[in-house]
Length: 379
Ligand SMILES: Cc1cc2nc3c(=O)[nH]c(=O)nc-3n(C[C@H](O)[C@H](O)[C@H](O)COP(=O)(O)OP(=O)(O)OC[C@H]3O[C@@H](n4cnc5c(N)ncnc54)[C@H](O)[C@@H]3O)c2cc1C
Image (cartoon, rainbow, N blue to C red):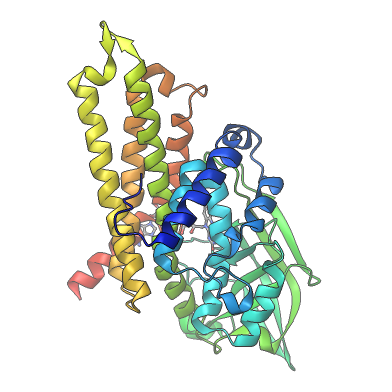
């Protein structure tokens, strides 16, 4: 379990509260959500009652007002239960963070008034022509009087089909390249906003991932977040700031894999003794624990820096990359520890392996993180 030695009493209480919720309301249903590939609205409402969709939103706007470190502790617990569910809750913070970076008080209040009662938001950056090249956007926002008119299609949007409000990145001046990108707040119920195809995913299947279509969507000029041309900077800063808490969910996947393997290795008898007594298996468990501890510490370090006002892209990218790669390795080993049963859907570890894979892909692939890190080293 997460290293509690340095947690405050409040963090320990919140962790136990979420752990209890995960054990009772998430773990017993996660396999069914995985098969159905549906976002569990009933459980989401229960999570909303606890405020878990509002972790980083300031208390003055009705949120939990949690710092990054505490959010990471809770996101790990949620990831231990079901990464898809955790990703959907977390994507609410992805939708909110552009406002915390560049939004006005009025914009934050407007956003909070929509989500606080029990709704989610979505962060709409990626388009079909390549998520890694995020500045290559075809979505446009044209100023007409005191409004912007938005046209374009966003792909792979977490919460795309269930969000009540979107932060949308669109070109206000194509000639300027990434410096011509701007960010907007767009409510779901505006005419011209529609939800496209839903992805049938290999993992995190309880999360909703869809296209979102904007067709002549009019938004008031005061829905522009920051200044015209700031959009790409806001998007990159957002991802820098959300990578640690997103990665905490992957640490939760690792922890769940360890828990399942320890239980199984003590019970499964082969060659006359529990497989845990075969050193090759015991050492796999030890390596899973070492790698998970390392990933957790990188995530917590990045979170603590942010809580002290230090936003370091390389630290965030390194934590994200290491955690994603670790989650893939630990869950692959978990399948190995369970042998044939690891490969069977009767046991939860193959799901963990499918869920873990996304952490090498979204919020910037691990190749793109290495571009960021090496670029910094070589600058
Ligand atoms: C389940 C899921 C949820 C998502 N949620 C969201 C969301 O909420 N909001 C949002 O905006 N986006 C979201 N995304 C999109 C995600 O961020 C992109 O999928 C990701 O950035 C990669 O983009 P791509 O899929 O277009 O891959 P591509 O950009 O086409 O990349 C394909 C491959 O080429 C590699 N590659 C590309 N360029 C380089 C390079 N310069 N150097 C080295 N390797 C390179 C990549 O690493 C990758 O392996 C989500 C995606 C998924 C699958």
